[in-house]
Length: 182
Image 1 (cartoon, one colour):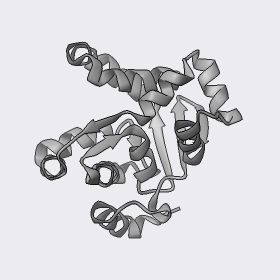
Image 2: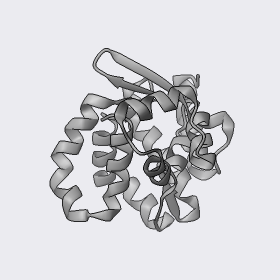
Image 3: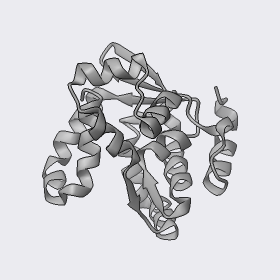
Image 4: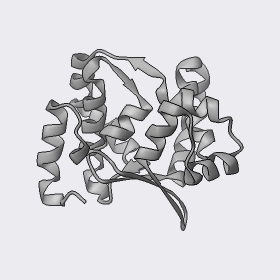
């Protein structure tokens, strides 16, 4: 696991350099209250690329009663972005606020490092002027990414009016959340 003292260095490098396996998340830990389930990012990547589910991922997909094809589409769907504009937004006070809110849902082991970790994962993913959920997972700059299911559900409920207004662009998020059982 990346040491906290060197996390700032890793995040700084991740912001300016393409992702490398040394600085990518290895596991995503889904939590819901006292329940925890860990999924290796490599299993998610394999599923997104080939459609083959590991037993662990298959269990989650089955329990959530989601269509694997929709989940795979959601993981691979890219959203076009302007890297320079996104960098400016991520490094603004408003960007800090949004990242701090998102950091309550997605964070490394140390919640204090959630904003820089999210900023690095998004910026690294956007270097080619497009972002996908799979790229975000692969570019998260700590060994383990935690996703708090309870906080995620609260955020989705608060954002529901915006999600409905945005339509298709947000369906990717809803597809993935549903497939993960949230």
